[in-house]
Amino acid sequence: MEEGVPSQTALATARARADHQVLDRAAILDDPFVERLIRGVQQSVFASDRPRRLFFAARARFAEDCVATAHDAGVRQVVILGAGLDTFGFRHSHRGLQTFEVDHPATQAWKRGRLMDAGIDVPAAVTFVPVDFETDSLTRALEHNGFRSTEPAVFVWLGVVFYLTPDAALSTLEYVAGQPHPTEVVFDYLQPAHTDESREHLQARADRLAAAGEAWHTYFTPDDLARQLRVLGFTHIEDRSAAELVDSYSGELTRFVNDIPDQLRASRIVRAQL
Image (cartoon, rainbow, N blue to C red):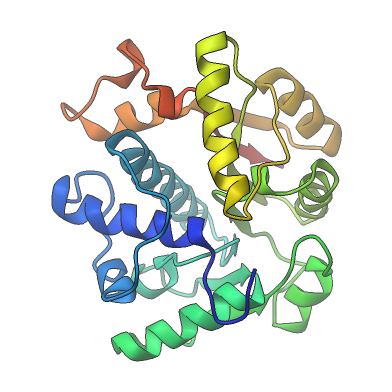
C-alpha cells in the first residue's frame, strides 16, 4: 500500500457496486452512495465482469442481511474488516447500531478524503479504525476506538482473507471467536481449483493481482475451513458457493448454478456463529 493511494481491489469492488446500480438496476444491492464516492476517480486496473459484479453485490447484501437479523436480536455493534469503500455505515437505518470500519491506514485516509469531496457526511455511529492486519493488533485498535469487547458483534470480512497469510487470517478468526455470544462473522474465501481449466483461470487471476502488488496467499477447502472454525468454537456454519449466493438474490437475473462462470468457481462465502 502507498500513502494517499487506495487499494486497487477496493476501488474495483466499489466500481462494480456502482455499475450494479446502473447495469443491473440495483437488483441485488441498493447503494446510493458508492457512485458519488468514486466519481471522477481513475479506474482500477482490474475490470469487473458481470459474474463478479453480481457476486460483489450479493456478498454485501448477504452480510447486510446477517447484520439486520443480529440487530433484531439485540446486537448493536458491527465491525467491517477491510472496509475498503464500503458504504453500509452511511445508509443503514438500524437504530443504535455502531459501525467500526477497519482498514489499512492508506486506503482509509483516501476514503475519508473522498467522502469529504463528495459531500457525504460521516454519521456519529461510524468509527474509522486504521489497522494493518499483518502487523497491528486488532484487539488494541478496536478497543482504543470504542469497541465494547464485553458485548456481541457481527464481523463482516469481505474480499480480504485470501490476501492475508494463513496465520494472519486464523489469528483474526481466533479474535472473533473470543467475543461474547452471539457474535458471528461473515467472510468470503477462495477454494483451490479442482480441474486443470479452473486451475489455469485461477492462476491467471492470481498472477494479475500479484503483478499489481496485491497477491493471494490463502486458500481453504470447505471441509478444512469448517473443521478449523469448529475448533475455534463456532457452532453454526453456513457455507455457500458464489453461484448459489448470487442466484438466491437475483431472481430471474441469473441461473449461475446451472452453468457456473469460471470467475466464480473458486469463491465461497461463510457465515459462522458462536
